[in-house]
Amino acid sequence: MGPLAAFEYKGRLLALVASMIDFPQVLQEDMIATYAHTTVGSYRGFNRAMTFGRTPGP
Image (cartoon, rainbow, N blue to C red; front, side):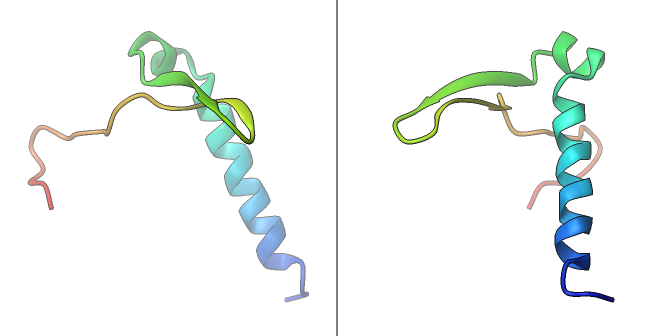
């Protein structure tokens, strides 16, 4: 495994998360919001924490 292998893996993982933000069901469920940040400007992120009805919390 070369020195960039971990970065390449994380890059693919990041690409999967980024594509999930525009997934139709995610948008329909209003799971993503746009936030303002003083340094990076605006960005999109999760609107609320995910919960699973039959799974106990931490």
